Length: 110
Length: 256
Image (cartoon, rainbow over all chains, first blue to last red; front, side, top):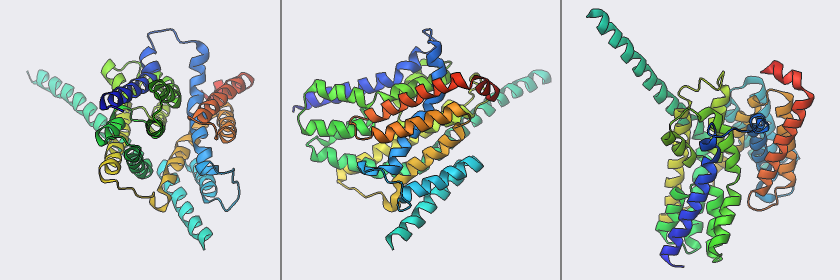
């Protein structure tokens, strides 16, 4: 693989990625967006975040789904979700979630 | 004359206050991204080491971090380079892996419509999973789409913090071959931070249903390559939300 080929390839990768990221940001307001698209936008954050979070908790490294109490990530995440729901305080949620996670990890190892 | 002076001072104060607001938003954005960075840094080092072991020259491996700036596609790209995959395969794979960013682009678009082209280009270049999650949380807290104030500085702070961390950590992997496992499970900070962002966004039943459907599909489709599981799950969740909205129309309107 020549250096020119490598540079050309990563530049192409970068352009493709950038254009995807720019797509709607640049087109919004310039074209009439269908109503269904506008309405669907409010569901992007809950859908995307949930789709990223759950496999991280229940299937780390592509493992089979583990709902058990021995899964420290899962239990700590449930605790964090409860705190987030009751307090809506991000810092408290993250701090408490990490502490529960560490405590559980120590307990599970012993 | 005195009146004119006080008018100028008044005007300067407004400009001054706007600058203070922008700066304070910028630093709030950095702060919001901090927990995630703890997990991103070890990940960046691993990328650097993998890219070198795949035979990429150091300057190319490092340039990929700033030119592509997308963790998953950099990892997959590195694997494809090692297997001497054809150019078309590498670029098409990058397209599929990063297609989810179109969702983020659409989601942010209404909030940034009034910004200059330069801002839009900068925000698009810096758009990642982490940058989107932290940024959209801020935009959703705003009372209306019209008054976005200094939120783009908040996004910039959070995205620049991620960008800087990614460049430095991949450089440590590329040039020093150093790699540390995420100590004390710090990579867990990412899902936890996302939970802190997502839960308050579940304001109504259609949103909660969108999250639930996306979760189930994501778990089932997690074995699919190229992040296809994520995009299928997200689309399923969005469609579920839209359908639920039809049935709970009056509820949604009341919330809004």
